[in-house]
Length: 490
Image (cartoon, rainbow, N blue to C red):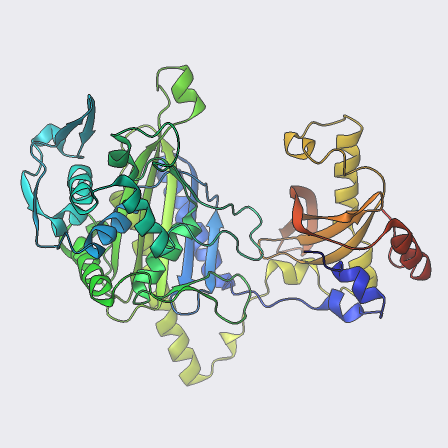
């Protein structure tokens, strides 16, 4: 599908207003700052190598805070989806018994273990307790009981829209989730055991949160939003209302009586589960797993009886100990407590009409304060992009990410659209006059000194080729630029 490039089409009718119009972000700046602080403290405490936390409004999908690095990787949080899938077949009920033995279950010479295998395992438990104690063996045996064919399990996940969305406006780093299935040639008889507990997949935290948010939202899956607008429903009912209700109650039990206790709040009842898995890296393959990486995760929502917000916390660390409940769950609890206290403070402020209730100035407010059309069309963000491309094309710096675009990114370019970017800096869309039908986008970041209100350290943090194309020709672009000198060729 071909479309006109936004700014060029605008400039045909001198749409300077388009350049100055800023979409309204959903992010709560105060919450964003607090979540960042809580997460960073925990990262430092456990010596993690990365971390990610997202807070989303349940019914609308609006993202209220999103900080850190969200990797597309394997995730133990899939266990909840696996249990829901089993429930949906009507072959499994939460009261059904399953024997997990001494905590070690052999599958084709591979050992599937529960976390307490060295203490003798859980023996016979019910399906509800498999979720409460994160039993890998119980999860697999219930999944196998429910699905005669492995592919049917993945078909059920598709029915849930598990792994959606494939894209979120304003989040260029998001990629479609990937699950390795029996349709792949190298699938073996034992692979379901690992897939249903978190392996053989690549999924981002925001995609996992979207699934859990649907549970909180009585089965309605909504698309996450970084900018205010109309809520988009991905799936009107991911599973039966009865099974969603059962899972909601189960997730409260996980927090009250199971491994999710570290996520408890003394201010509000929460629901959620922990997850964790071993992340296989290049170091694992080359040096005998001396640097084994683990993902520790927690996902849930509050208040449990009338969900308003869902939260995911995920951190990666090298080596043991690695506990999703103790590490990520405690971050979840701190975020919940802060939000509850903040909401109470806001209610008091509304009643007393305190003058201090004005929102704090955001970093982008500082970055783009007073900008006119002239600044939007000629600024350091665009110059940073030009320098970045020149350095690559002149072999002054290497960038493997740009290699696939090398045939397109030569010569001068024209700006199609530029606007503030939610995560800080500017989002730019542009086309090269030698390849006018190709539209590229890039995020150019800048650091802000809040006290001095100064900007520094501009940096290109991503460049990609958009899926759509422009139908402008080189001649049309040159003509537009000649008629409107403010639209420079860079």
